[in-house]
Length: 41
Image (cartoon, rainbow, N blue to C red):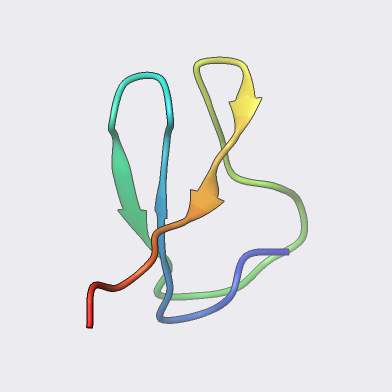
C-alpha cells in the first residue's frame, strides 16, 4: 500500500507520483513496482 504524502518514482522512465489518498494495491509503472523517492538533505 502506498503511503500518503510520499512521492514514488519509476526507475526506468523517471515518472513521479505523489500519493494524496491511500488505497489497496501497489503503484506500478513500466511493468514494475515504483519505489519511494528519497529526499536530499
